[in-house]
Image 1 (cartoon, rainbow, N blue to C red):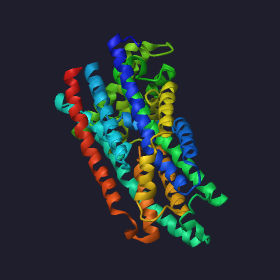
Image 2: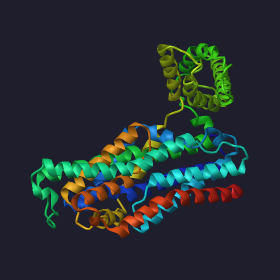
Image 3: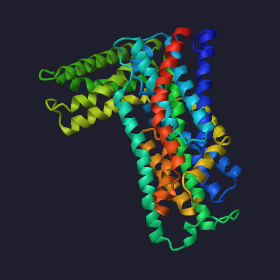
Image 4: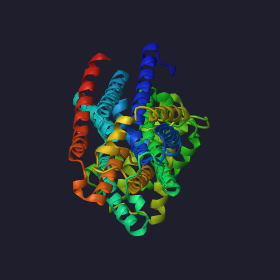
Length: 465
């Protein structure tokens, strides 16, 4: 298949299977984030809640686009996957997948809410660093993208905590019905209006979780396909090469106007690389002519040059000595951005296998972490107001992060939201210190442990494969 021999085909399927396992674990690891509130407020029976959550996670994968998936792919510079042999690519992929699976399973076993996003990003950074150690002088990690994602993961739990506290205070001012702030009667279904809100917020967290976390699996599968079979998956072959010919024809006159005589060395290097990329894309387009798709041998070069232009052009336009009027600048940015339609894509079958894996995983294994979220973060039983406010904040935060193409931790946002609602109800003394200590410890350890483990596994696999 894809022109690979039996051994490489088997490894390809193994890698994709491991991504499905990761997403399956992600499903039952993070299910608690959506269903804990409806279960502990007696709004839904556990089985109904997890089936609802699983179905909406499934749908969320299709609705979320691929912005987060592209962010995951771009954590590793494209050169990291192509300037090496295929066996080293497999070593990287297996190392990061096994690291993510091991850490997610371990934290789930001990009932500790832990970020799958932190886990995955730590694993990717680890294999990138491992590659940098083996290949001297290689660019191994896209630190710009890593810092952007890292900032998102740090800010999101703070937002969850603060916004949920604020929402609880507002609810106390606006809502006069005190049963909203009281412990739900055991075994009794809440009033219809309260139950409807809790089911809606549960649905919102489930859907947005699928739209964000599901994309992480999509990004991993695309990393695998680009690394192992770039001929077929380096670019989107459903888009006509003629589109790229038009893009290059519009960009070339402007980039030729930039002489770079007053540039710093790094800016001059960026300009030279961009001009070279434009010339290579122009040459490939001319050779392609009227063919419906790019020739196999040129597809990865098309991808590499498009990504290079997107990386450098914005920075070139920010240089004071580069003077284009606003209309010209807007046109250039539009042309460069439109070329990413070739690189930012995922086949529908990838979305299907990830959504199925996430949806199925959501329906099992949820109980351990549900108990932690529902019983062990605060000293009081979860109230209707606490459940609704924390989930509404979580759903909103995840949706905004997905819109901006940033991976965010559902676990961290909701756990911190629950903590914020407990503080709003009874002060800091209303929190269970031992549980928060375990969550904070897992949060602090996830990145260093996953970076180290994935780097070590990569080194080991490099000798095996």
